[in-house]
Amino acid sequence: MPESFEDYCARIYGEFLTECETTLTAGMTDISDSRQECIVRESQKYAIRKSYVKIIQDHPEKNYTEIWKVIKDSHLKKKSGINDIGVITRVLSAEQSWKKSSGHAFEEMMKEESRIHLQPYGIELVLQRDLTDMLARHEIANEPTDLLWFKSIEEKKGIFDLYAIATVDDQKKVFGCIQCKTSIRDRVKGDREFSKSAMDAGFWSIACVLDGDFLNLPEFYGMVNGMPPKYNVNGWHSVYDLSGKVRNGRIFPDNLSFDTFKNHANKAKEDWIRRRHLVNPAWKPDVDYTQMPQR
Image 1 (cartoon, one colour):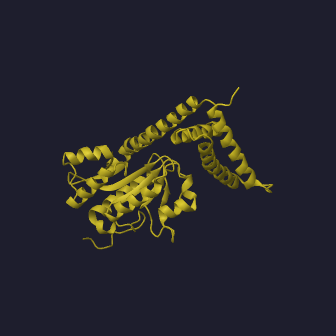
Image 2 (cartoon, rainbow, N blue to C red):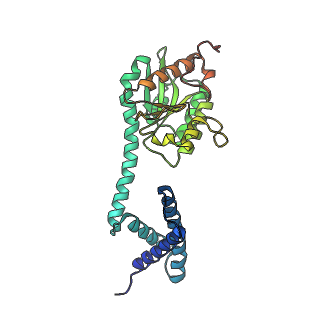
Image 3 (tube, rainbow, N blue to C red):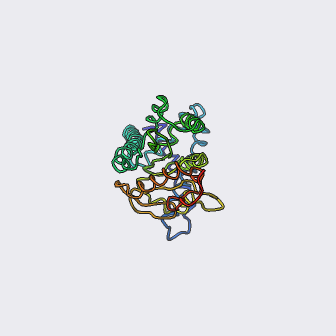
């Protein structure tokens, strides 16, 4: 039975994959897990590019986009061990659905579960859509410069997931910007830049993570706390690990009782109201600023 185009592409991809893996492991007897991951990653990149060029040369009548898609399918089948691309597609779709739904669920959980713990301090957390509605109804009493900043952030969509609002003399004022993360995201470095923008604008800027294990890694420790020369300044005022595992500089362990978070939120609120000029990027939740001059 003649080889189908899809089977041909899968064979070529597999041959290049094996070729690269063989070359990279030549002479090795004991390969560490991290080294093995690197070998797999490099071999996949090699196989994708080499098989794409060869298939184009062997089948110039085929559409280039179609060839790329067939190589992708070959990769997915080999990587997953599943030979039905329909099944793989449904699994990937379910994964994407989970990522989107679980992320929104985490944000809403933070808002709802924190309510009873923050209420005694006159603080509430609201979602971006809540803040948009409140701004439209002129319920937010921040200064005009703050309102312009909120507008610029709103136009970028999804930069901050929650906002901390304080009720001061029956007026609602936004004093904090919060990013919620269930896992590491590709855009985490971009999140850091927006957090720095919030701190520069005089807001309490923090992140809350579901599982902070990755925060033990030097790269992410540096992103949070600052680690020259790559990260000269801290990226957030604080990051809260809701799994309760990590305590490292500006990284604090916490839980759904919000024991640490609520105290830090109240301190940030008080400093923001009475001495906002000190709520700059260097502000820390565990420093007493009460003896410093007010403006």
